[in-house]
Length: 142
Image (cartoon, rainbow, N blue to C red):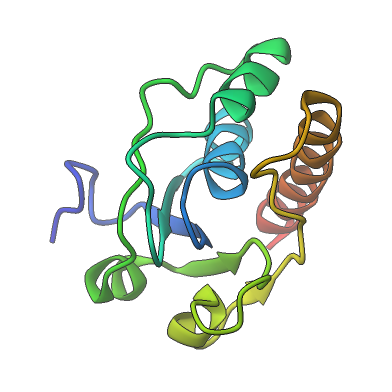
């Protein structure tokens, strides 16, 4: 089976948040940069917005990662089934919490950058990068 044109032997890590506009998009960008061989990222949301948060795009550009080509996507059963690893960025809204839909997943508990000033978005970005780097190290050692 092919998934978004990728070979079937590649493993997917799915980053999920509610709007798929900030945290999960930044995580996808960082994972794409640091991904161990054989792993690819995808992100989605339970209620995706039409576009990525412009401050998330700006914060990522500041560290040399361009996420302008990424688009918010709706979380689907197909995405969940096709993913080897599922990570919820944080459950701030219990009614639409992505972890409810993911089953066996990790919850990183990262604050939503929506409506926050650029300085706070940078702090959130840095936390996401730290977690992604730890994840990559763990995947490489297994």
